[in-house]
Amino acid sequence: DVKVTQSSRYLVKRTGEKVFLECVQDMDHENMFWYRQDPGLGLRLIYFSYDVKMKEKGDIPEGYSVSREKKERFSLILESASTNQTSMYLCASSLAGSLRDTQYFGPGTRLTVL
Amino acid sequence: KNEVEQSPQNLTAQEGEFITINCSYSVGISALHWLQQHPGGGIVSLFMLSSGKKKHGRLIATINIQEKHSSLHITASHPRDSAVYICAVYYGNKLVFGAGTILRVKS
Image (cartoon, rainbow over all chains, first blue to last red):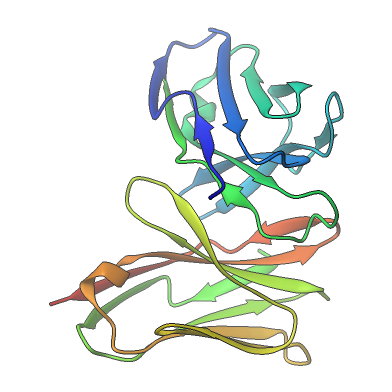
């Protein structure tokens, strides 16, 4: 079974702090994704990566950056956290090839920025 | 306006009832996904469809490409089916998600 893990289930940070969210997958997937999920809005894509050191902006990249130094690990960075970044953050991965293929999700990190 | 609309937003059913959740989209797509999210956050992929119908256990998913519409049916519903069901379409090299349908099945 594919396993996607995220470093924290719950995180509380203060405005202005730098925040790192880590995601690791164990199935040698090429594609990795970061989403945020807010009530009534569904999942929105922040960034994705289709290879090591490659990244593409999603729909809402402002205020975020990403890092993919190793194939299995995709990090989401909030350079200076703000209260409007309070949300559920979900990481996902999928096999190489078409980005339309099934994505496997991590358990999510619920981030609160005070 | 969201490109993917789901209805209903909330649904409460009695155990054993037949349930239908609808998904309409406004753009041409090559694939549609149905996903399930249980309390606590974990999301599981149920189906990927590009045409016709798929069945897995008590779950059935259909898609009508011409009408830009898909339905997810649950037969003989059970309290363990309580979850958020999410429709997502593959459009412009990424998935676009609906807001989800919150389903509660009472015993």
